[in-house]
Image (tube, rainbow, N blue to C red; front, side, top):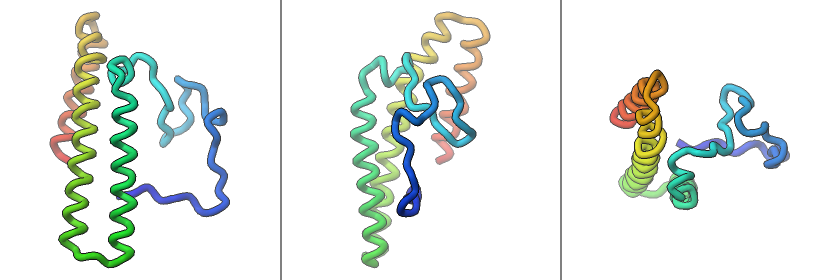
Length: 130
C-alpha cells in the first residue's frame, strides 16, 4: 500500500517548520529523530534509510506495473519481494531495539524494564501477525 502524494500545489513543510524533537506535533505525526535509540547508536540509520528508499522505488515500480496493466503474477511477485524487504527492515529494527533499548532498560531494572519488555512483546506479536 503506498502513501498518496499530496495534490499539486500543496505546501510541504520544510525541515525547520517541524516541531522540535520530543514535542508531539499531532496524532499522526512521527518525530524526526530520537537520540539514543538502537538503530542510531549502532550506526544502522544510513542502512535503514537506504533500504527504505529501495522499497519506495519498488512501490513506484508496482504502481507503474498496474498502470501498464502488467501480468498479475508478475505484480504479485514484486509485492512479495517488497513485503519481504519491509519485513527485513522491521526485524532489523526489532533486533536493534532489543539489543539497545530493552537491554538498557533491563539493566536499569524497575518499571521501565517491565514496560520495555511488554512493548517488545507486542511489537513481535504485530510482526508475526503481518
